[in-house]
Image 1 (cartoon, rainbow, N blue to C red):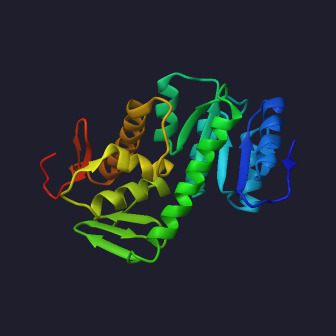
Image 2: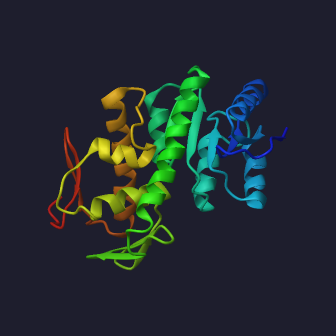
Amino acid sequence: MNLQHLEQESGRILIVDDDGLFRESLARNLSDAGFATTSFGDGVSALQHLAEAGPPDMILLDWKMPGMTGIQVLRQLRDRRVEAPVVFLTVLSDEIYEEAGLLGGAVDFIEKSRSFSILLHRLELILNGQKSRQTAKAPQQAAVFDYGDLQLRRDTNRAFWKNIRLELTQTEFQIVDHLVTRAGHDVRYRELYDIVHGEGFVAGDGEIGFRANVRAFIKRIRQKFRDVDAAFTHIQNYPGFGYRWSDADDG
């Protein structure tokens, strides 16, 4: 069933979950908190809605659903260039699911057992972090930034390596942009984590949690570069600290 509420000030959230009671309860709580919500019980219906209505400000996605799983829905979203932040809400707590979701392009992985107040706080941090980054960066950066073999087209969030387009998500693009504009300098895990989740966001597993989140994103970014250039080694890790974009091709 499709549940819609009048659009309010906090933002528009799409909920995709086959558990009707959970879906309706979450939609009601979010509506009371000032969000406009639309909800669907399956991925196919949600994707059809997005094709007609355009992207919301955030998508809350269940992992286990009949017909099309949450990770399959996420892949479809990214293939269709829907760049709205995706948060998995699931009963699954194993790290293998969290890593798969983050590598697929989700920005967070939250257990359904968490209280609504905690969930709301984390969603607001993600949304507020995205808004503040967009506001702060837009007037200061050139629309097209060239650095060696890399070209970043910031007006469209498109990246090219040796004139070949990289299939980066919006978040992955922001991480690469942040690293390359600080080329030769070490960038802390926390600094990169704030790009993904918003400044001040606290991972469920603390320092270990946000490092794992960042490593998952970097792993995916590196692979996308290597898909077009097997010799790519410019993103280097400094264990216990973070990452650096290096001009040296020494791995």
